[in-house]
Length: 142
Image (cartoon, rainbow, N blue to C red; front, side, top):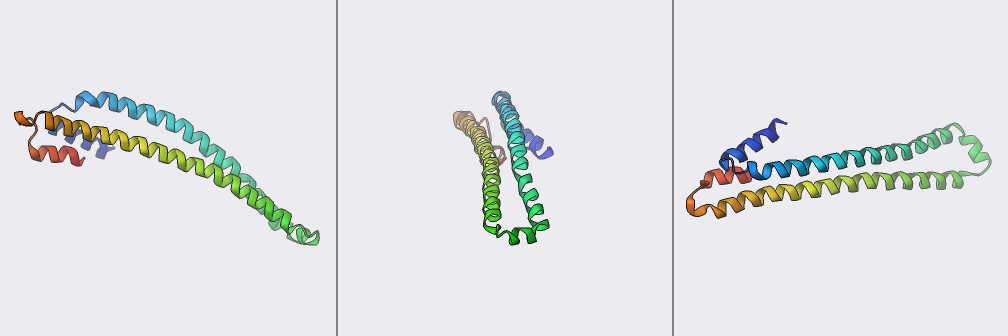
């Protein structure tokens, strides 16, 4: 938290307060993204947990009934059912990973917009000497 606040303070100070203009829409975008992602991620985590519990139940059943499974020669049936359960769980887990990648991409784009604004401000105000080179480097490094 303090790292984020320190970065914001450095960018605001080095752009002499001009970064406050795009900060409100960017903060609003961040809020919308996190709100949507939290709802989606919660549901995806719930689905992943629900698809994982049959695996543990099947594994426990297999351990307790190993002799019966062998006596009826049902190893192939149990193995194929385990593979099917693993595939279902992996599909749900893959969706969680895709959601996280979706969020990472959006956050990187918003971070790029911050850099574009600061660089554009520096280029636009270069003849006026509004942002010194050292301060520009500080603002772009955060």
